[in-house]
Length: 260
Length: 260
Image (cartoon, rainbow over all chains, first blue to last red; front, side):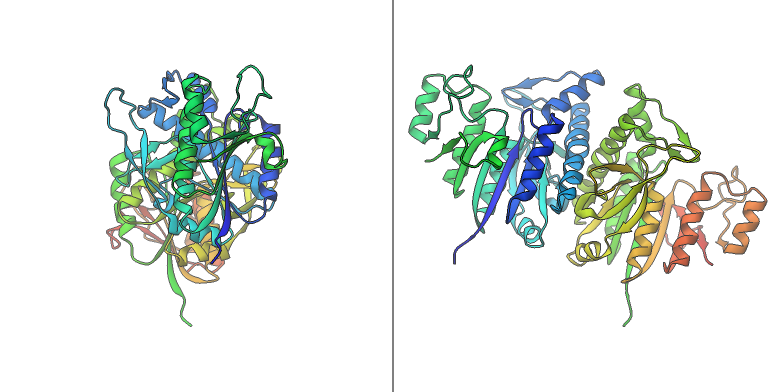
């Protein structure tokens, strides 16, 4: 039997912080037909709140070192402020959103990252995605909106990279659906030249990927994103794209398509 | 056909702010058999965060005046920090909790309170509880955990008294269930003498209620709580009790029972 389609969109970068761009994006997200899941970041807002509270933001290789105060900040900003504002906005467009952390219905189980070279604190690596429950919600017509918070099912919330949440959900849901995963942000895709916004590399396969790494064309921030993309493709996700938030509407505009 | 039972518990006051007491309460909540809903406050934590951010907390007749900065604070604290920590803790006790605001699945629709004598800002009065969806979740085995945030379905989150949320949900769910509503907090019930913690008035009906108001025995903070209680009873809620958080376990301990 042919699988139904499921679209999973991770929205990040500066889009969330820009009210006008976010509104446009959410209106377009609401208009997508069929099953869909939204995953959002919010690191910039978390840093702003941390600053106001006099909490130092320490980010190593794109990952936030998360002590108790920082965890409280990211839970407040991601699961509270950003998530619930997205949910209420989607509802105005008749998109029946519910905001989730991994703790809700035990949807995403994670393990606290062991402190090896770096102790990241309350940062979680995903152990399991509760795919049956997510499927149940999707089939009830619910549009899940996930933020970057998971838990260990031992009473501890954990800060978890939203790009990784998107790819792990995409992989898990591939058991049931033909999944397309989109990473949307302020750039038009993976750039050949970071100073030229139109220098988008339209196709990246694993061979090109390795060449780009060798040539240092892929920046530090893009590296974990691309790792998530290739892992998703290897583990059964049908299609993975990286592009600007406007790609949601103008699906033929310039973007990067990943393939194995 | 006899209706199934549904227990709705509002937990507030100092219980939420005390980790040990909250843990005990949540363990006991998880152990309750059958259908249940938790509603929580968190005003004290919101005031602490507002203070740290230099935002003045202005509370009139037990209601927080809510400008944009204050709304952000209560959304972060209620829907983020407190709600998600409760959810992860309930999950450790195999209680399949999901945290909700009124925006999620459009569960609680509210209208911004008109500015008459006092402009409360982004404060919402409940217009509708989406009882069918809540019923659907309960029947899936989900234990909803509501915080004091609703929305107007026009993209605006609203700060809404958690006591009122509890009574309005209780009224709405009475269409389907035999509902018991409990308001649990640090006191043992409605007190005859605020200085004597054991001076609990064990039974209050509408006649006694009016006498207590005339004699100024009911304090300002207790008044809106009792109004919620009587409204609930008038509109079909089966049983309403006010008592200490330990009442959840020791159901025969001293408390106040309300009746018409």
